[in-house]
Length: 176
Image (cartoon, rainbow, N blue to C red; front, side, top):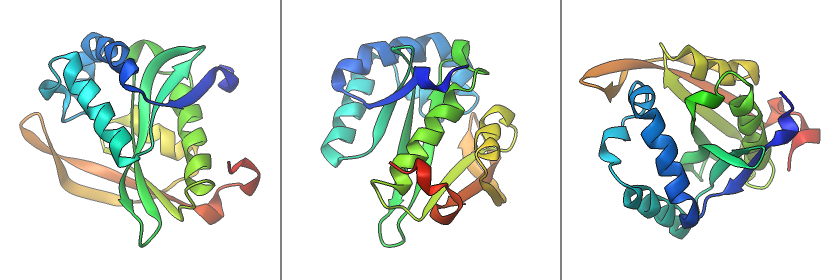
């Protein structure tokens, strides 16, 4: 996979219909790992969420593969006093396993450590979500530990693996 085919662009309300189509196609797949999926019942939910993100000045990006929207990635949980943030992401199942999310996350790290001046970036994923855990592991994050019963998902509590990467561990030549 050529990572040059993966680009990030700040989401616009105009992207809501395309995002909702991806959610609809992947609803059963996403339900295994995303708590908000059942509450997203029409395109207005996504449009409202994007509009709120824009108002708050958050860094929520569409992931585009060869010009097609295939997922999202964003910073969430900003701790400005400590210059740290968390990353959340999801990707259309038809595009998984091709290095797209790893390339997108790498680009987001460059933005976070560069333009946002973050010192620490965290990724938290369900312990059983091996595909999602592979992203921080491939990118050199450190597994800080397991947060026991940290997320309520589909009627049960699940353990979450917590990863972190420091600005000093990210190659400065890649910072944007």
